[in-house]
Figure 1 (cartoon, rainbow, N blue to C red):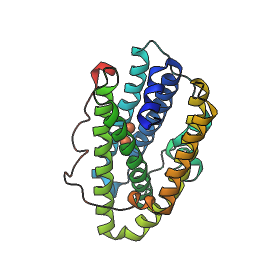
Figure 2 (figure 1 turned 180 degrees about the horizontal axis):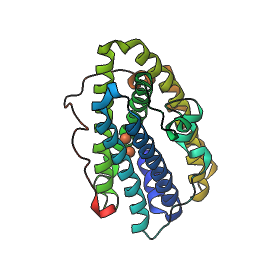
Figure 3 (figure 1 turned 90 degrees about the vertical axis):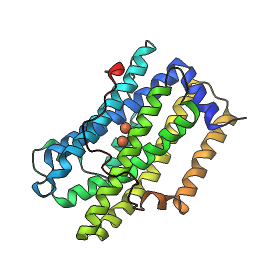
Figure 4 (figure 1 turned 60 degrees about the horizontal axis):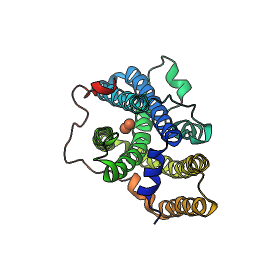
Length: 262
Ligand SMILES: [Fe+2]
Ligand SMILES: [Fe+2]
């Protein structure tokens, strides 16, 4: 029977598909790390207390990038160039979601409206990251090679999501509720499309590497379209709600390290 677990298992078992999978993941994490690092440096004076949390967020994403590169190295593989159509972060930026990279390259401080854009964008993308890592954790928490990495990243993504909820609620209480809801909706609408397109592109590459028969490709493609259909019809709502996390201050304190991957 074809299940998500079987698909992932095949991708993990083959060097070439594992290489592409880890390269795409590492590149996305590294871009996230860079973005957060820049945002931390440009946080406006009125939002000063946020800066160390954004920096911690960035340090976590950088660490995830190192972990995925470490997994490659452990298997004697080098990263491959990430095909443009599989570059989730870049494609979202091209849709105008989140803060423009060009802007972040300059030393102009951000304002509160920019911080809201950053947090709303993160609220949506961290939801995706947390769900994807939870799925991997469900299947591979005890996997000898990737189990530990998956558990560690999954915990971090949960923290990132909790942090976004908490900070957005704080800003909503400070009177920014309408702007937050508007940007959350825009971000979610764009994200579900980009996620669909990237999933299709990634699976096309995997299917080619693993010589999947046409029938399997059709099932995989139909599954991605069905998931998008569900999200478009209402699944998107889970990405725009705001709820105070049980444990607040998820990104307080120094980042945790993963020395074995450094
Ligand atoms: Fe991450
Ligand atoms: Fe994250």
